[in-house]
Image (cartoon, rainbow over all chains, first blue to last red; front, side, top):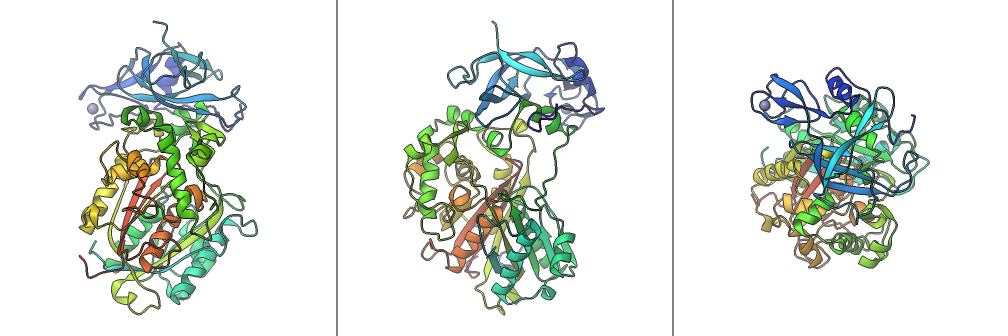
Length: 136
Length: 382
Ligand SMILES: [Zn+2]
């Protein structure tokens, strides 16, 4: 795993609950108990109001395709051109993802299409969230 | 900042632009710095403030033999120099120093002595963006565009056209990397880099540098060069993660920086004779024109298509050809500032006749940061 163009993430104490949840194929995000906003990426306080009164919760795993590019530069971790996307979670926050298990073409990747979370095993510690077209 | 109280008295690029394998990055800083000192008749011993990015001010001051009493190492990507200008103006106004040298040098192509701070696997970007295989700015900076195209109706042809218009400006510049005319078809037929971006919609990769010397408007009168006054300034940052931008059709950092610059300068959009908008990729002039308020959201593609920013248009923009055609060592902001200075001095090879007000708008670290400088050669108009 030494490809600098797909490096292995390393959890920090603040992000550990996120990566631990992915081990069970679950996507967890945080919610503020004071202002109710969901947020990502993880941190021990709410970026909307500054409150430290926050909690982890399981996300539905549903999302829509917000925007993307299809990278044509060669990357040894991918077979041919691949999407680098930003998805919008049902709960509101956005996160980066590849859109997997579908053609990597503009015809197959339609903005706002429904997506669902899946996971890519990168190492013993890292089970990377990915999104694929929703199966209804 | 008090309008027009600070002036740029020295300005120069490196002796060569393009491929400079005989110089390391720090020597590119020094080459540009010495050229700027020659431009305004100063020696290193006359400089008492140093600002630079990527290299520490310590490195630059020592290398050039300068003893500063003020330094600024703000590094927020390619617009760092706009922020240096703003900070230097404030420092000179506050009496912290008198004569500030801002340097840039980057071995972007030859990679001799080039340093870039790494993104660690523990950084938020390292955990939540890099595992998805982005390969630098062409695959990150570009992600918002499909959203913009869907929401605003921008077409692939309009995006390609931005590179075409800028090539027209580059044709007038002997130092531009690419000067031959291109068509929308040429752009759309160039190699795909990251759909929807083709090669000709992405910036060049070159070596080069530039430097500026600023002092008070009072002292500027004693210099051999025509002073270019700082009339207004702005800056802001948003996020280092493109995935976490609050909007994909507008940049918050652009809006905040632009508004401060226009308000501090006390100008209307109709006052602007010349505009530089940092264009690492073809969509940046679109975001810039809209977020600075020159046109309404969604109108910039048409505005450029209708040749308003082209030679002969009412808002000459990126008159050196921009990062798409002039040069782009990685941090292009310094070259945009240099072209604004040339326009205000009346010395640009693509001179806008009678121009008295130039707005120079930069972006850094994808859409992470922004800086905006309003320059004028007419300090009486305030
Ligand atoms: Zn909150």
